[in-house]
Image (cartoon, rainbow, N blue to C red; front, side, top):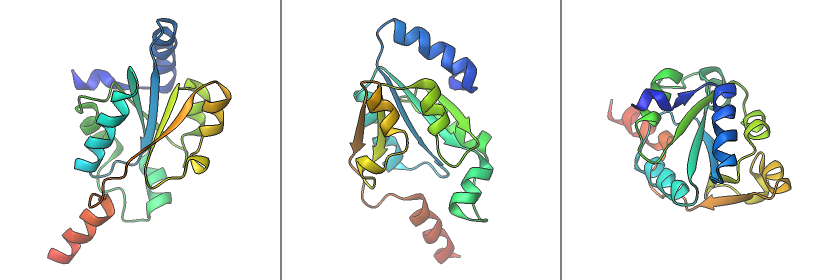
Length: 159
């Protein structure tokens, strides 16, 4: 069941420790995922292909508002996590309150840290932590034409 993928930080840390002990490669990515679109789905599928277990950190509502402005998020944290948990390539979903996922990355120390192609590797938050622990940062090709901001702007224009 998809809801079983949604975890709190400490519970997920315990699960990931067991999976690491079994030799599983843990991947991590994060974002607001306010309106899920095909670009997100392709991104998650690419990330999952490069690890055994894919964890997605999701910005809290307050964090999204601070990063994106007062009109966001469109969907609540609960709704965003629920939708993400239904995505086949995602194994676990966890929320974070801060503006960056650095605390989750410090806790989980994933083997692979994924970000979209609109990022430079040296700018990826937590990349230094992952690399210092023999992990790697992977930049996944950005899907042109797919953007939550673009979807929102299109909806506004059609009103």
